[in-house]
Structures are given as structure tokens and as C-alpha cells.
Image 1: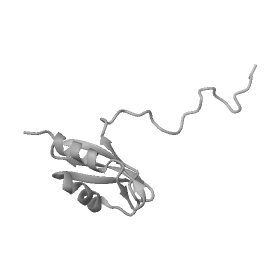
Image 2: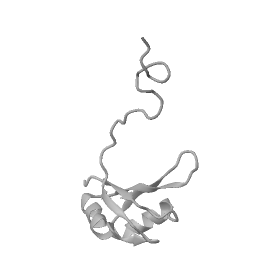
Image 3: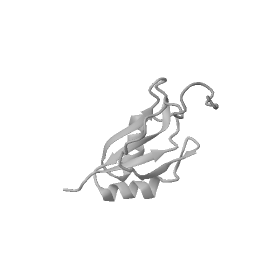
Image 4: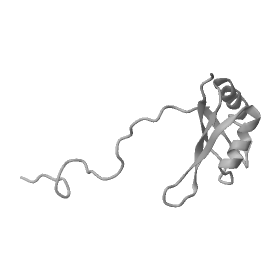
Length: 106
């Protein structure tokens, strides 16, 4: 059985939703899932998402057909999604100098 392939889709027009993203990829094969990533606080699209195609051949056809394709004035970026990596925690933590100002305390 063919293994599904996840694609990264960038520069998505803010007018698109998950359903319309899936419809965009349908001509290239069976779309297993399509998700536009939203901002946690505002719920607005972050302008990128992921589409999972049923096979590597379908994924490659979608990359070939849609990378650079313009939707609502924005050229899509479509490529193979990289595996999720552990990212360093964000925010917090200063530079480790301690105290305020970081000047000479002697």
C-alpha cells in the first residue's frame, strides 16, 4: 500500500479555508486532509498549512502543478513537509546575567 505524503503549503491567501484548500489539491489526487494553521489568539489564518495526499506520486503531481500557482494574488509555495522538530521554548528567560542592568556589580 502506498504511503501518504504530507505537503507544506505557504503563502496561502487569507480568503481560503480548509475546505477550499482541499478543493485546490483535489485535481492532483486523493486529499486525505487539509488544514490551514490559525493564530491561537485571534483565530486568523497564519497564511500556511498542510495537505496530506494519499501517495507520493500524487503529492509530487500537486507540487509540480501548484507550486507558484497564484490564488487571490498570492503565489503558493508547495513542497514536502519536513518532520516536526523540537523547538526551543519561546519567550521568558533572560541572558543569564542576573539582576537588573547587567552592569559590573563589584
